[in-house]
Image 1 (cartoon, one colour):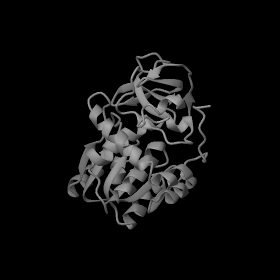
Image 2 (tube, rainbow, N blue to C red):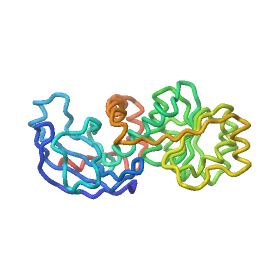
Image 3 (tube, helix red, strand yellow):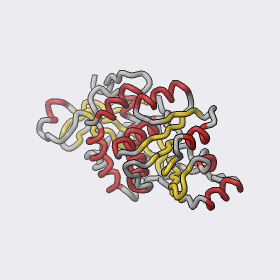
Image 4 (cartoon, rainbow, N blue to C red):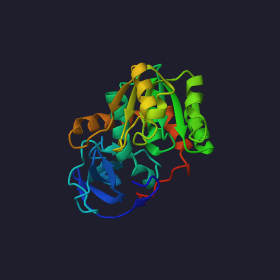
Amino acid sequence: MNDDTATVHTGKQAIHAAPVRSYCVGETVMLDGSARLPVVACMESDEVHTAPLSPMRLAFTVSSSDSATCVPSRTPRHALNVPPHLAVRDALLLPGCWPKVWVGLTCRLNVRAHEAVLIHHAHTTAGMLATILALEIGADVLAVCDSAEAARRLIALGASEAATYASCWPELMREHGGADVVLDLAGGRYTGMSTLCARRHARIGVMDAAGHGLFDETQWQRFIARQLALIVADWSPLREAACASEAALAFDAITRTSGWARFTRARPDSPFESHCDH
């Protein structure tokens, strides 16, 4: 899914017996090989009071085999509470990014407090969400991104170090002490080079891995010598629905933290404004 594009459709349906004022459908996103459509449903405010736990807006994904203007009759358990003032463009990115980031860092890579976490493509929505999640866990974040402006935003977000791909980033990260955990959100493009700054016994997580080799011969030898671990960190919305429900609870909690406030300020085109419920 394009990180900055949303296609909006409007309709009336019922979710948890509360009418939907409008709903917005984003571009198709691939999750574990499955095509999904992100949806933001805006509920009628006068009906929400009948269900105190229901938010004004919900974000979730549906199978792309459904009609682009079809909202399920009941909200999926993995639906995310959309924070107030979040633009629809950004809200549509959440259900495709947050669950896989949460599962990747907490379930697959088991990130712990005081570990150093290197995040690739940290300038993307998924990368910035991974950054605030790792910081909330208590980890130290090392970020690699596409531009100097993005690096400044990531430092403002709380990263201890932020480098661009145009720099000698493996050396910079090694000078910072190296990484206990690597999260490659770029399909494995930087997995091999990350062995240069991975600490001994580091865990390297790859999402949406491409079919090509992740390591050249030298990088593979370094991988073996340092006793690194390679982990496929993808999340399946079909096979791991329970994880998505846990991720939704975690998302609700993190939006109440100072990290979320920094996220909203650091994102491009801040401040957010809501367009879905007008």
